[in-house]
Length: 141
Image (cartoon, rainbow, N blue to C red):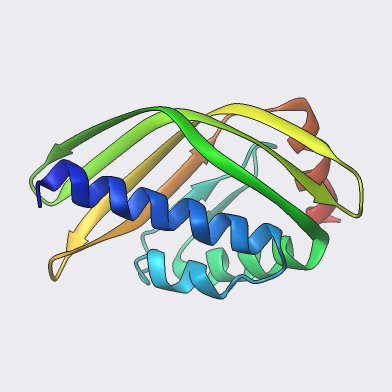
């Protein structure tokens, strides 16, 4: 399998895990992320997490708030170099925080690192999206 195809598979696994979070199950996130102190995420409202422990707490909090939904990466571009790869694209979908329907369409960047022959996500960043801002701000209160 070509490197590009294995990164694509890792990305698809991340979005499957993200959709599990939206449906109240954060556990698949543990499989797709590298568990290290230097992993990061930047949320649509400007919030951020550094380190696996902080990320894991954030994913569990998101799972507690959402009541369904799904997001997919579209217009994907993947670039690989050595043990690192990144992808950019548009996340589009619908999710239901607190029973309220929210449509999302925002830009996203994901960075992956190959460890022991397996691609793991090490960074996830999404731009602001009006519907997502209020949702993620509510997670901080």
